[in-house]
Each structure stands twice: as structure tokens, then as C-alpha cells.
Length: 440
Image 1 (spheres, rainbow, N blue to C red):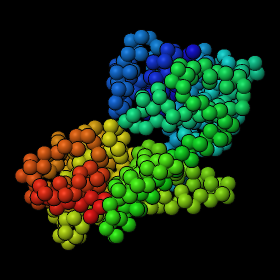
Image 2 (cartoon, rainbow, N blue to C red):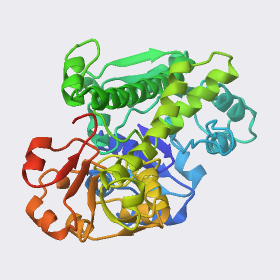
Image 3 (cartoon, one colour):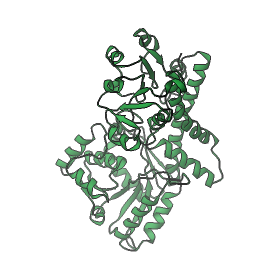
Image 4 (tube, helix red, strand yellow):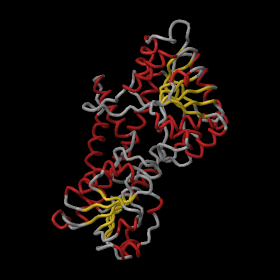
């Protein structure tokens, strides 16, 4: 099949490259000439393990191309995926659908052959209805006689593991009541049938809500265990034991029960907020999600205050130096969107603390968001003359640190482990004052 992927960001690029790897003929379309030129030169706009190699191999095979020419890109496509951004709208928190609507209008003006239009972007309930209306109402090729249908096909990709998630998915959700669109989507995903990937066909609105509901539930699990971690510190329990004891219940599961500095990234913050706004619009309040959003936001700065306490309190912390290890919201990505490190660094800076930081992939993006932070070339450089080192993101590179080297570089051997990578007794035995999350 020929597939057009409109949007060459995280979702569009990963999805397009994987579809091409399945044998489809894929063209990725983007309005940014610099991004397309870079992709044509093999330069990725994001860091995702294995993506550069996957793109290069399919470009060489002739199955994957990039263009800024919209009409040319969608010409003859059997499926046109909309994979553009839906950030939180400034001022009210609703999902900004302006990019989705603009693409729909362009499709309506340029569609000249039958195609199923697929919303891959994360969109609120009812967006597919509006996309269908815009395409049908736009002048141009999508007039009488040109068949099209609009389907919802939300993505469930984890940054850092996106290629594996796409090729070996937990499920594929396709929302459409149109039999022809269902047949087209069946052919799009036929290569995954060998892996027995479960395909769930639903109404379009159900598919749109599934994505938001899934992200909100995972965000709730993270926030729940973080609150349990606070309680563990008060009562003298160990949150890792509590999480394991809870997670072994197969009705609950162990994933997303890792205490830390709060969730961030491109999905959970904006999607929980968008779900709240949708619920408000329909007068169906989601009190649990509302609490999750509030608790998570306050937690990030609370982690900054936790570091200040480890330095001896607000008065003692002023004028001291802290080294942050990890800045991205999770490992194996360069994504800094809503990363807890931003609030932590700002809280420290507000308290008069000098902040130096190292991240294996995220420093270029972080530098634009954290002007108060000095970026350095390694974890050991971050520890140089530091009064405390703080593990913010659990990159593999931080799991076997040379503590003797770090201790020798520091002014004071204080380690704040916000990801509970290390065992308290082992670190303290090396002469460090050790603070973690939900453990004493």
C-alpha cells in the first residue's frame, strides 16, 4: 500500500519508518523545509534508539521518502495519517487542534483518489467528526465522487522503546464504523498479523477516548505510588517493597509503580489536562484525574525542596553547588517536555544554589529551557566541587557510578537519588549521606 504520513515528528517519523519496514511505500510530509532536508540527509530531528538506522535502511530500499509537497505526497495514497502535534492550548489547557484542522483542510483541497484519513495524533473525543466535516466541506479534489472515510488509530508508543512498541504492540485500536475504512486499515496492519497483535475495532469516539483514558490511568499509577512514597518516609516503610507487594497482584501489575520525582514528557501532562477539559465541557467531572494533575505538579518542586533539605536546609543551601545527573523526563530520549528536572533546577536556583548538570542526550534541548543551569560534559564533571549530586533521570550510565571518584571530586559526599537506583546501606557504607524517595 501507499501510505502518506503528514507530520514528521516523533509519532509520524517512527510510524512512517516502521510502516516502510513492513514493506509499505511511505512518504512523510512536513511543512518544515529544514526538517525535511535534514531527514533526506539522514539527520534525525529526535533521539530514539534504532530510529536513524531504520530510516536509513528504508530510504535505501526506496520505501521511505520525505517531502514538503503536500499534494504530491498524498497523491494515490490508500491511507493518509495525520500525525501532527496537539499541544496544550495556551490559556485554557484544551488540546490545540489547529494543526490537525489545517491538515484536514489541505487534504480536502488536494484529495484526488479514494483514501482513508487516519488521525494518529492524540485528539479529544469528537475530533474525527470535525476532521470529516472539514474535509467534506473543503473545495478541491475531495468533492462528490472521491470516496474517503475518517478513522481514529491512536498511538501507544513509549519514548525510548517506540520501534519495539510499534512492531510488537500490546494492541492496535482502530475506530471506525465504515466497513470500507476497516478493510483498508486491515491491509495497513496485515504485516503484524504474524505477531498475533490484537486489533480492537471500536467506534471512532471510543478510540479517541481510549488513548486519553490509558494515559490518565498510567499517570494515576505513578502519582499514587509517589504519594505512598511520601507516606513510607513518614512511617518508616520502604516504597520499593510496598510497590513490589502491590504490583505482584496481577489485577494491578508492577509497571508504573516506581516512585520518583513525578511524570513528564510529551503525553501525560498534556493528555491528562486535555481529558480534564473535555470532561468539563461535557459536565462530567473527573475528580481523580484532577487530583493527579495537581499532585504531580506540586511534586516536582517538592523534589527540589528535598534536595535543599539534604544540603542542610534553606539557609545552609544558599551559595552551595549541586550536580544534576539526568535532565530528560525519562532515559533513552532527548525529550525535555515537562521534565521534572526543569522545576527541580528552578527551585534550587530560587534557593540560591548553583546548578550544574549532565545528560547523555538532552543537554541541547535543556540548555534552552534552563538558562540558570551550567551544562557539563560528564557525570563526574557535574560532581566537581559539588555539595550534593542528584540523580534525576535513571539513565543506564548512572547505574554503576564510580563512587570513589565522585566522592573525591565533591566538596561534601551527599547523594540524592530521586530514582532509587541504589541501595541505601551500600551507598552509606561508601561514606555518603544518602537520600532517596520513600525509603529511610
